[in-house]
Length: 269
Image 1 (tube, rainbow, N blue to C red):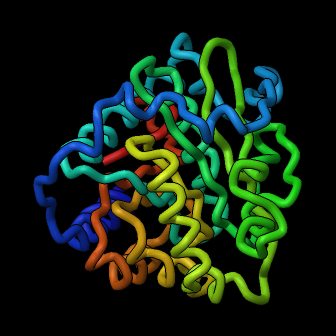
Image 2 (spheres, one colour):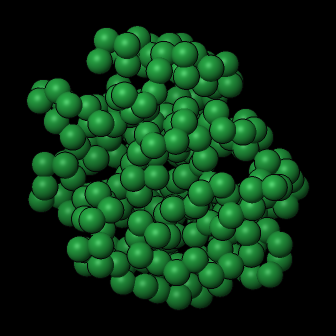
């Protein structure tokens, strides 16, 4: 754990600080609109979620409560700075970034005055739809290639009385970084800001050190949540990530796979 804590301190050094900004909008303005009415819906299965370690759909478990604490801290920072786009990434694979992104989105969805969208931007290994038990269809790549509209590609996922909008991903390994840096992607992100207004949008990005995808799209994100893994992430990995995060706000560093009893399910700093 000492090496991970050292790595966390290094990651925080990359945060250039925060600037106060006016709030995006009142929460009620983001609940539902014409775009939401056009979405097709799907009901999530609790047993499948639990098998995928997605526990934050309910606040009744100890693990879910830890994600609720993370949710509160992240939302406080996002609201204070008027941020809408949150990128979730990790230094390398197998750190639990997608599980963290999904659980954070499910936790936000339980707040009655909030709404959230979860978009899978990992074009190397998109896993959001698989974890949630949703069909992929054309997904994100279909929208970028103009084979489908944003409304037809997104899904209104329901779990109990709560719901979140999910934009599934698709594999495009040979051109993924080009898509990330493209004007087409910029247009899609502008559409998300326009259609969702004050809704928080969580982007599950690929690991930062597997290519230049994350570097390409970071300037279009408001803030980053970095997910590290005990036994998976090294101090050298964090140092390398820090080079690319110097101009990006790091809201939290989540540490997965923590075995300390005091840390319980995971730690975050």
